[in-house]
Image (tube, rainbow, N blue to C red; front, side, top):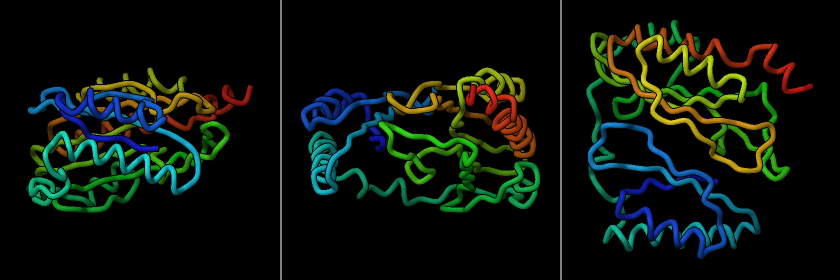
Length: 220
């Protein structure tokens, strides 16, 4: 299970390779709305022996190299740090979690231990992408936050409402899986503004997840 970062040029050929390899395309979506060039995320899934799955995944990645004319991971842009003078201790106090700093980006990864997720009967863990995350960069006065909420169907509207009411744009709402139990939605967001204000918006949305009445509904 995973996703491939593709451009408009890559999308068609890489999707064809996923199908050719007998894998499934489970989602195609954006994380941003005013990005240049236009970047999309194409999720793929499959099951089988470790060796066969590795071969199939490599074939898809090789197709990306072929279309781009080289290995995209060898570029320099991803190795550059961005400005970050955020008060990370204060952000931790507001969000209620501790994040990790990497190249100027302060990222929270928040699991959903309250939900026992399976896909085709196989357990899906935080490491497989079943998590909510938020990445901050910038200054206390002007920061950017983007990320992804992992939510149950009854949490979709409350989380969306909390983010929008706090000035954070919802840029995508979709599934990453097809045969998962229980049903899970992924909500991507983007916000720019004072860091504390963004953190409070994120906390307000987090407060809409994992509520007892939601879990009761899932057990009915």
